[in-house]
Image (cartoon, rainbow, N blue to C red; front, side, top):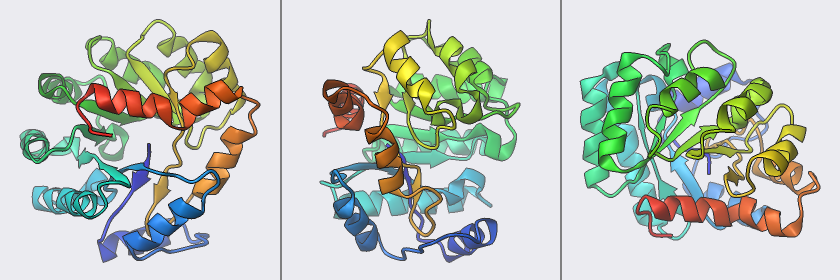
Length: 265
């Protein structure tokens, strides 16, 4: 449910400069597919979106990155589900780009408000979410501890759109306790397991909220892998979840959610 791809050399250079401890650099999608194949259990399909357009230098760059995602999905339709990624700071141009890629078949959008210091409960964020609601697509939102995308601020936005199913990535990172309280009374919020700081709260989520709204994710970047897919997989496998729940977390929940917004999977 969480893979970044980019064919941009500047993006690869940026990743190297920000994470010099990177163990591997994969320069082709084919190599990434091989990593999916080697993971145990094997990763059959991944949700992919760009990374560079989180803070794009221009609307045309944002468009170019999303076109690359479309190309990858066309080449590997059985392995990847594509998602648009928009830079909310471009306002109307971001909304135009969202509509463009939806017309080309993408049914998921990733928005990371914190990358451009836009609070997720701001009028601009609500404007973008209104468009997402009208298009009937799935928003995937980065969550963390910041003043732009902590769980409470995201919850403030999401509660205004109770009919929009929304994924809160990372389960709030360090703020998973806060995420639990925000999510508890909002049945339209789903969470993923990527880079969760307090894994025990994953078990709490299953016990206290729902086993049907939790999804495995690796947060893997082609070009740099901050968290390797196998490491993230092993964390989930070793949490002690019952086999029935694991089956849901490792694929069934994501497949059901994606189908609900029109993704053929």
